[in-house]
Length: 446
Image (cartoon, rainbow, N blue to C red; front, side, top):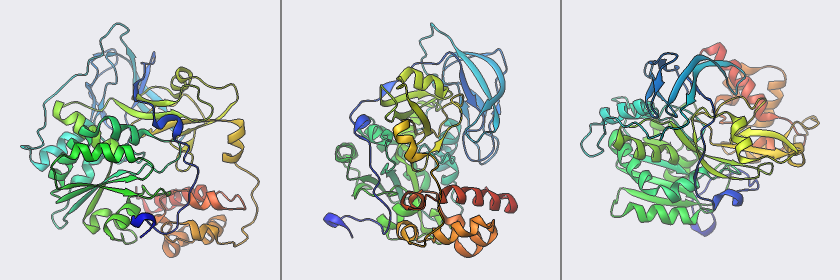
């Protein structure tokens, strides 16, 4: 237990929240770029398979590509226009991926194409799962894991609780906050679909205490549904990690190498949930997302509903940049990634675009690294009780298999707490990402 009797977790950190610039501003519609670049792969798993051809005219919301197997989702047109080309698009990883280059019609009303509605009260769990896959919904908190795949529950498993993650503990990001304030009814509608699909008895919406207005709004939207409750949690990073939330709310610890399903729970991002509630009643597909555009280097900070495929350069030029912009992050500064090119497009997993001036960038970019002094700060900060110091030493020796087998490397969810507190400026989380990628390559896992 913690302050005011609220539930919380051990360890963690308290970085500056930096949310005031955007948390009070309503969501605004972002304009269409001259060309939208829609990758076929914006999620964990197989890329979608194109069902339209070059030169074809498409309507906003029309299916551009169908799912290719279990771990894949559909892609939809972010605007009515012409498919000018199907070719390679730059991605944040540095790799080129296939996708659509769509030129929007300047005079179009850009109405969203509707399809066959899925009713939460009458649809079967399988029909809801299929509808979510066909709507193209993935984890919009940044993970990009196909939402429908979580809901395909094996016969020997049971889910009693659905946890809705509205914590949004990442600095600068206020996307989930604004969605809860402005689309609370969609959140509750989405929960009804999730409860039915998962066969769960209850849903708990977790919200950090720095969003009391969102908690009040969600509670008001619940009305008389006793299966849905709101839990307000203390402000601490990384409160929003799913294994942290489930331990905090339900007292269930997820064993190493296990999933939330193994403790009879599922966790979904609140914006993903709202999109399910918004799209499924209309049989529509995900063709835009709410994201935070902010940071000290952005002039017109706010939360915008941005068409999928909008180039970052267009986003930042439209929002306005200060003259001394030095670095840009996709997502927040803790778990996001600094981009090397502004030519990459907004995807379903883009929670925010945060730009920093040279003044802030010197604290975010690589600093002179010193040897580990065994201070133990990283051990005290790690929310899942790993030993980042030892892992870092092994990473320096390329002993990746030992890191995984003896020191639980694969349990690390890359929150960045260890890097934040390290007085020697050792890029621990970056080392762990390299090590995990090497282990996955050897073991051929996702």
